[in-house]
Length: 269
Ligand SMILES: Nc1ncnc2c1ncn2[C@@H]1O[C@H](COP(=O)(O)OP(=O)(O)OP(=O)(O)O)[C@@H](O)[C@H]1O
Image 1 (cartoon, rainbow, N blue to C red):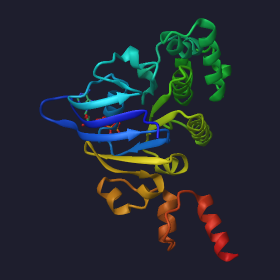
Image 2: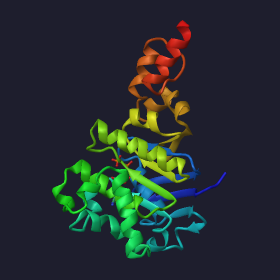
Image 3: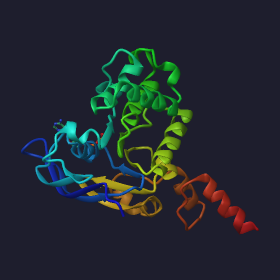
Image 4: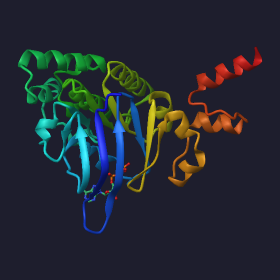
């Protein structure tokens, strides 16, 4: 299996008093993966370490063969793209098209390629008609889509999304769900921090649960959501449909309404 990210015994702290990550070992391959966990569990810190913005105190992170201790953020930029949780931390250009072209130009794409990739990314997110607008004149949900497009346009093998569904309505969430599945089919590693358990169930093959700086669970998404008691200890709940089906007496862990309906139909045949 092709390993794109390898994390070995990772420790990190911002201050002397408190260790935020307490020995994380994980490997990521091509599978789309959700990282879940309560606020403060260390998820954003973890992805900033993967991106090389922060450096490990102990342990190593290898991104496509490069150790983040030795590589600069600029060297890693062509391998790994990170969409920040808050779009305002990422956006600084006065026009959407310039914002989305900035990343590709920065990693050495020529002007024409950068423009083509930027337009392709804007089209994937259905916001190509917004290219001449100032990002700060857009709604928060469209601004978030602009930050996702900026990273897509760089065409990196690894794409990390921090809370992509924030401020999105149903249509926006569907757009992001389809995008993640498409990117994954293209062979990209998509890693996503997310609090929306229903979205996780419908979208990701693998789910990693962080709890107080450690990995509590790491398995395929169905297996993770079948462990209700362990999730409860981490102040997490399975998706609504999973809980409802259990309450209706189902033994299996259902991840979507469609799955449950199929199961009921098959039983009554
Ligand atoms: N720049 C910083 N300086 C000091 N402490 C920080 C800093 N950033 C985060 N922390 C602390 O590190 C811990 C982990 O924070 P982190 O943002 O990684 O968690 P998280 O799981 O992403 O939470 P959330 O779901 O709320 O985004 C928290 O206790 C937080 O207060």
